[in-house]
Image 1 (cartoon, rainbow, N blue to C red):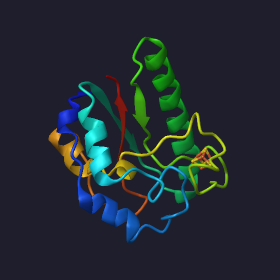
Image 2: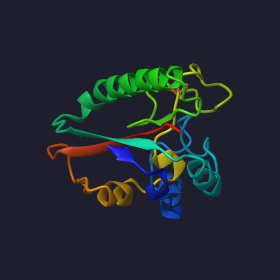
Image 3: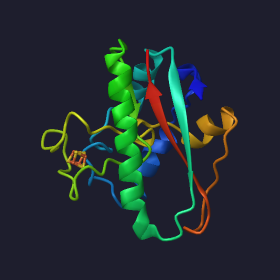
Length: 160
Ligand code: SF4
């Protein structure tokens, strides 16, 4: 759905959860600490007046299936960002549904990223409170306790 970027919620707690508690902290070239500060993320979003919020539902069942599934969705979303850009929207920028999985093993730093043109951060890496943002837009999202539950995942395409 179309989303007013002014309604995207940025929160310090999101960055804290990345820094303390995420088992992949420091492992991703598009995740903290390889991400702008929370204030920079807030200012970046304020530069936009139009965005699209993508809601993706999936019951994985088996966590081993998650890699290929999220890699495929991210790729399709990146292709869309490219189309929107080529349609004349020079600011088009995608926040992908799940951490970049273009490479089997991430380079761990922006400078060494093996696919700089296609690698994008998640909303969470940009300190976006996806829970509050989705609920405010009328979409479901809950904390899940295991992979048998249906996931509600989100990506954001900032347009202009
Ligand atoms: S393109 Fe590769 S190296 Fe760069 S962020 Fe994605 S997985 Fe990491």
